[in-house]
Amino acid sequence: MLSLTLGVFGLLTAEYLPATLLTPMAADTGVSEAVVGQAVAVTAVAAMLSGLLTASLTRAVDRRFVLLGFTVLMIISNLMVATTSNIVGLLAMRLLLGVALGGFWSMAAAIAMRLVPAALVPRAVSIIFSGIAVATIVAVPVGSYLGEVAGWRVTFLTTAAVGVVTLVFQWFAIPSMAPLSPAGLGALWSVLRHPGFAIGIVGMLLVHVGHYALFTYIRPALETFAKVDVHMLAVLLFSFGVANFAGTLLAGRLLERSMRLTLALMPALLGIAALGLALLPAGQAGCIALVVLWGTAFGGISVAWSNWATRTVPHRAESAGGIVVVGVQSGIAAGAAAGGALFGSGGVITVFVVSGIVLIFSALLIAMCVKMPQLDAQR
Image (cartoon, rainbow, N blue to C red):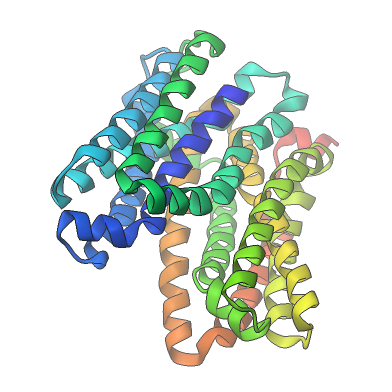
């Protein structure tokens, strides 16, 4: 579990780095910041396709070697980004990272199901996905600091070194795992047709659209609602990351009690936090509390939906995980676009009010309409 957590941490750290190193990367490669920003977009697109196709394209390969292969791709990507001299090479290597990210993420919950007893799967997945929260905390401040003192290329070389450590750890820790069943492209359609699966993905998509419409504009929101300066903003964002990490681990325990409660509670708390920030005269202390609530609630969402998908269709767990990756990436893109439209038309208050309503609606939809796996129903 820890070797997989380290893999998720390395992949997500590499994904986040361009956001913190945009200016020096643009200056060094001779292009605008907007062009370098496409490094984030191409990674997301590649992750979406990789998450969808990994199960079918690697259906005859030992799962151990598939996971190790994704870690190798991460190392190569970071090494080549650190040494490339032009934007074409940089974008190509970011595509490679996207392949590793989407594939690794799509398989994580399915692998956990094979490595631990059924009752401990939620906790195992929460441990694996805690790597996302740790990357959120570490990547921005550490990446920015290393970029400032040693240059952006050294930052990517350092991330490649983390990948090498991860590869060695995984080589000794991950056992051989033969594919459980053939998973051609038809398996994706079979999963989507499974009773209750499609409506669950709709609920998951709405949650991510609502969250990423908010998160895209977290800085102007905190500057408007809490009247924070740059230094206080950094403290609040760090608090958000720590709360996100705590929420990831908390969700694993909560899932063991009730999956329906967990899936519905998280977006409900997000919606309450969004509406509270926009509509209540909470003051700076109240805003800090609402940001911590926001971070804690969102920390459990990836864990909860990965558990729901793989346990709803356990015989197609890898394909189900791939569909979750596509849904999440689509939600990120749609949420950012919707947030931009709302911000342009009505400002940050409109973004938070509309997104809060969407999140509350998604919680009600999940509570009333989404079918839970049989194990949860028996509890």
